[in-house]
Image (cartoon, rainbow, N blue to C red; front, side, top):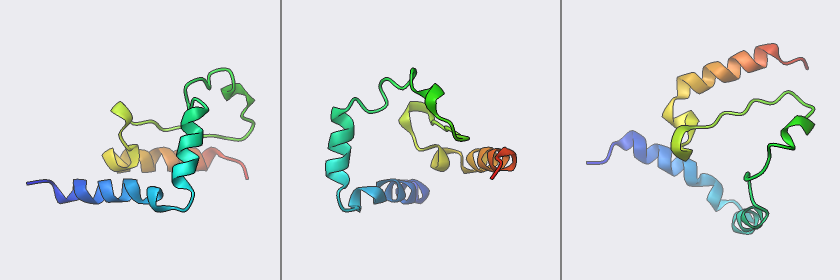
Length: 81
């Protein structure tokens, strides 16, 4: 039997695919190379930025929601508005 929590996580992770224009946007993103070469552009980001990435391309906010929430709270406490 499949874990119901996993089913809910999968449903949530696919919701964005129902948005108008999503297919065209993901095709354009893929053709552009996606995230393949950001190393030289990361330094150009001038706003406070938090990047969270899960293991093996999983969705970190589903894999470890408390860890992600703690990172978000910590980040927001140090950001000046």
